[in-house]
Image (cartoon, rainbow, N blue to C red; front, side):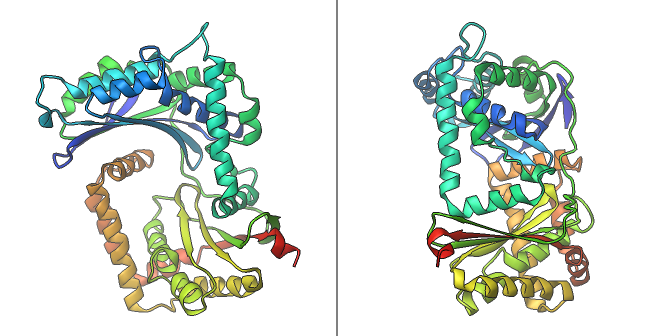
Length: 420
């Protein structure tokens, strides 16, 4: 990793990919008042810039560059909201022309980031309205999907003071009311204040990338550093919250605070525990709740790593809710007490190992791993990570899961079920 123009450069020189990927990640504190403006800004980056002032002009230019891909979006990483601009372009080795596609790629990114399409020094109202419509449509799709809604609602209810409760996409209320001036102010803060990482992956030369960054990404300003990872600490005792919605099935989410921060000694043991609990078909939740008792079609556990939380989610019938909760508690206790077979332990470790090892075969995953290492200030060393997984013992798993504290049982009833 090197610093140029106040930003961090990460080059992954990998010859096996036929494309070259560039990911520019802007990070700022995840706050409810700014999340919506940054999400809208991502939409604007996708569609317009001064050099290519329409979606068609953008598309035509990317087609000329052998189908270069380009996208922008926002996501949450613990206490930070990351706006990512990413692009992939064909490696010059596979082109029968004298074009320098990598430089063209950086030149395009320069235009998008530093020369947005403006009218009278601000984003055009028509562009703002279009971005507003797209974002509201995304939010509606999430609201209409019971599984997504139950997860986001549970996280929102868990602790209003924690970043865990804030959506990186923004809120309906803020998106409906936000002005073009606010979005432009968010754009200026992004250029001047955000923590910025540029990740490049492919058959590239590090010095060449450094020169391209100097030429095409001339960031200036005071770029702060953010401590993204934290351990959510929910002071309230275990709560059970029940709501209803116009859906045909009941959804359930159990939320635990892990008391483990990503990068801690308990992190990989907890990842193994999560694999045993509900990540694979061999897991306790899948085998016991789904297969043996036929209570659901799908059930899974998910480690929300940068927030120090673990969630278990499933869709069931109302009549089975108490049985499902009891069975889920039983599976968690099995791991806490060490009541698991050597076969399940070994299989879960192998599956997790294979999953992490496979990140190097998929460019987006490999770049995401590099970014995680950067956020944690850890070396970019996949072999070392794999060794950590190999070294996890049964005792490590028991110790890590002993720290789990259940904090929320969220039940979302279908309206017809709630009235039954």
